[in-house]
Image (cartoon, rainbow, N blue to C red):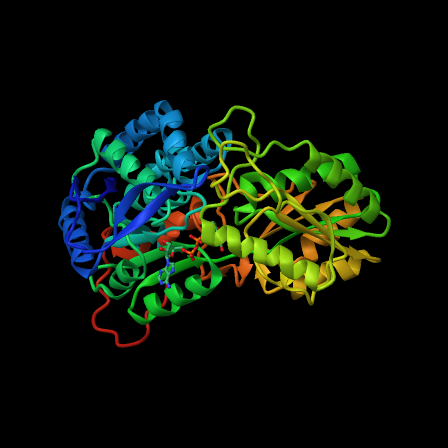
Length: 497
Ligand code: NAD
């Protein structure tokens, strides 16, 4: 059985752990590898390597860091297909979707290529007679990233290119469910000329995560994953004196007003609801229809579902792949059962799907519920599968109130042709990322990504300008060089003049 290893100080190593975890191809249901599960000792080794590397990397010229980022960008772009294939073989998403994921990660690397500009400080001349003030941003030291299974290439790339370009060194703890992409990317980064110890990967689960959260050598932690774990990471990390940004789960709503272009809205609901089998933190999971948009959307979505091709992600023509594990498949099927027993109308049932030749794969067909209400479990919980719920409302205001009452606040969308309604939505909605006739409003790399409420803990969104701020500390310098005026001793509070 192939083993997926840690990457510490520029080398692959099985580490010292006695545990391994299974890695499956979700399309076949067959175990394809085992991943070593890191423990406190492995984390110690990675942090020690990163601390040593920080002594020189943190001091390295900006242009040198940029050159390595440019080289990494070229290699990732050239190997995009190889990365996508590895990703699909362990995650299950279609190759096209995987290529899109790598592309969005690549855009963050490209953003980091511009780090010299992004780290510029402010300068104010003559704030007082002969006195200038300026700001500089300095790296934190060793920082860590803990990432989810659903974007095994992109989400780590939301973190480490910016952290490293800022002068930090990095320890990544990727998801144990699809770990091979991180191993591949670590070797590609080394190929780009990154010095040993600047980027390290420790695989594992809670044991490795807890070792990171309590390690005195780690200055900051970026986390992306489910809300209960995000809350735990934030509380534990900050209690241990670390700067923490922890992005959590989601329940994304899409409102469709009666004046919307229903074809556009139905295309969007199907793409955003079933893309990547619903395993996206920005997936639409509740379509909220207002007035007579309800019947039209149910009709539009169900006719589109009939035409979707479900199959292994590496099969040409497949539009939707399997779920990540058998346990997750069982959990999502359980939600479908609970929706039926709680009285929602099951319009399309994906439970009977058979993918020929892949009967043991973790497949669930696209599933559509109508007349879902806010008290039902399928409405309240993040299902993270290809299950779309339709909630019918009479009034736009009630639809907005429903979203604002939801504990999550990651992404949302409105479909309408009324500019006034769209503007009301963008102003009143209590959600961090808003789409207007756009179902998955993921900001590009030069903005930052982050939800509100239980979808994020900590004050910084991820990547973009907020990423640069998260991975650096600001220092303000007040200096007097020109024509110093000797005023003698003065114990009064300094004022300008
Ligand atoms: P998860 O929370 O189960 O795992 C995320 C990471 O935390 C993994 O590396 C895992 O090993 C680790 N972990 C799991 N349990 C832990 C524990 N008890 N203690 C310490 N560490 C633990 O999430 P997942 O199932 O891998 O990913 C899906 C979730 O991620 C969904 O909720 C999705 O919405 C969310 N997500 C959010 C965003 C965002 O930007 N807000 C992006 C992608 C995914």
